[in-house]
Length: 142
Image (tube, rainbow, N blue to C red; front, side, top):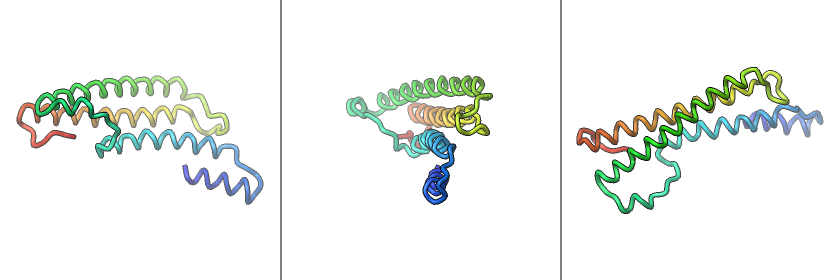
């Protein structure tokens, strides 16, 4: 993304011949970076969360609510990944407007991989939380 932006600035101002594809590539790379960054944020437990209900619950009730929440988020991510797969299939032969060598399916495939990664994180969290509720886990994921 940075390289594409630097190329654009160099060719526009130093060479006075702007490249048509650098802005679109930077924009698409921003989309991919956002979704893979979401996986990293989810792994680090740094995602935004509203903990209003958590203040009223504790112990097993809080863990059970966390399992239900993780199940709903995993369900959404599975639906999202399936949608990405369908869009990848539908746009595999479609190229971007300014880059005839770059398929739009690449973007949907990358976002689908990120969605699958987030789904895996949710499934692992559910597993750890259920073990914690059952009294067999060492700790419950935050």
